[in-house]
Amino acid sequence: MTAATRRPTRRATNWLTTASCAGTDTEAFFADDAPTQRTAQSICRNCFVRTACLTDALTHDQTGYMVWGVAGGLTPHQRRSLRVEQLLGNVPDVETAALLAGPSWADVMEGMKELPPAWVAVELRGHGFLTSPVTARLALWWSGHRGSLLKPKQSRDERQLWERVRDECRDVVDGLAGMGVGRRDVAAYLMVSEDALGRATCAWRAQDAAAAEEVAA
Image (cartoon, rainbow, N blue to C red):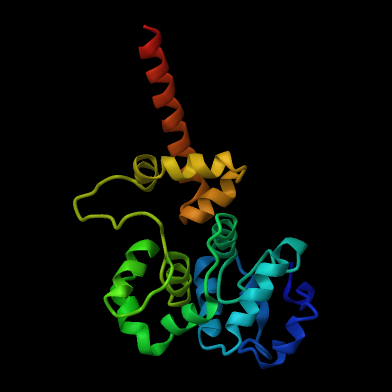
């Protein structure tokens, strides 16, 4: 898919001409490599219609027009994660997220960039700001941070990413799998690679098999 084939929807034409990406080389918005995607996101960061763009992208991702590339300031991986959040009933307040990702909150968000969104939402209460974890997560993404659900890694923690998923995420993964969410979407929701999730899943299966053998004995 190229920039030429990315068609704005009927609703998108109301804001498309005022977007920060208008008139730029939009090929960067369809790159697969992380550095180029970050460059595209930096353009989105100062865009006045970013919230409208994201709303439109989430509405039309499933049609094939906006499955690839950066849209609404988010990568495809992040938008996939956000769709899982919505499946769980977690809908972000995009206007609040935009405020938190703005310059007046930059120092606060920078200080919480390694925290899981739920922790960020709690910390924001100390600043007199009530918001949901998914809104905090969107604000983290728009601020250029990871927004991972994993707990911050301690300095003495030598576990690999898949081992952290194995130790911390089984309940979440089992719950999503029970809802019919595919592995790719689960990995996006956790903000980990499919490989890390696959290795953790294999470890759980081995643990289950060992436990079953022990019971049988």
